[in-house]
Image (cartoon, rainbow, N blue to C red; front, side, top):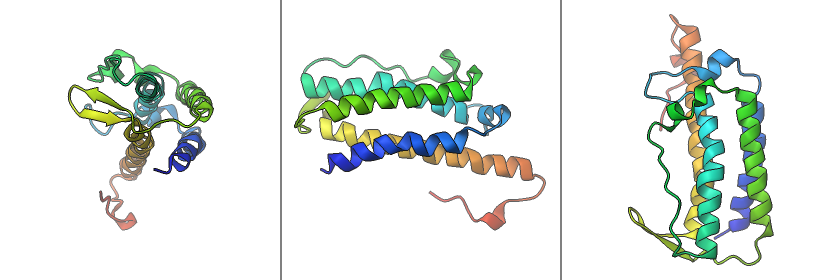
Length: 172
């Protein structure tokens, strides 16, 4: 495992995300292609909360005491319950950046972590610390892709009645 590359990627992600979003109008940040989809603002709220409540504490718990129970996560309807779409985009992105900086301080303080330690998850079975670290970076990429899909959708929305097909197909 190249944990240094993953940690570097985690550290660089806010520098990619922030410039992409900081000039986005509020209307665009809150736009959803359908009610069941998240807006860009909701995605950013999720990223900030996942940093504080999921990846960092679960990796820390697994490295320190793999047998310790993880705090429960209730992601169903979380964007609505926490009012992500009513928040300010700049404040939300800044909160994510601050949480990620705290994560980086913690990750960089680790001395020879044993990424083979595993937590026994009731649904997924054993999850090793290395899998958590790699998944953390993959989570960033998944949500960056989701944000790109929203930006593509905004181009289609604002270009209507003209199509955006000339740009190319949105593929998986």
